[in-house]
Amino acid sequence: MKKYKLGEMEQKFADLIWEHEPVTSRELTELCAREFDWKRTTTYTMLRRLCDRGIFKNENGTVISLMTRDEFLALKGERFLEESFEGSLPRFIAAFTRRKKLSDREVQEIQQLIDGYREG
Image (cartoon, rainbow, N blue to C red; front, side, top):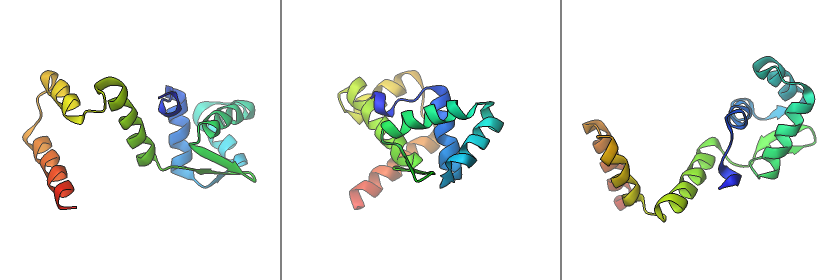
């Protein structure tokens, strides 16, 4: 899970890259200085961390993602289900709905997802 679990600033940094990619290392350091008041070394340290996790790649001074934000969130969600609910989506939904009532709209959206899965 650690590979797909980001701290608050790591998540903000990743979001910044996804919003601007492809982005040069230089542009990224300028963005981070403006957005987070970071020094160049802080940006490179954070970039190296996320590259080591296989989320981004810095190739010849250009930073690109190895997975989209949606792919990352899907993997993060899958890991959460595995670790917390033994991979069972129904168990997660049951636990979730014990504390929070689903709106009619949410129930309809979930039903459409299920129907789309059955047809697909």
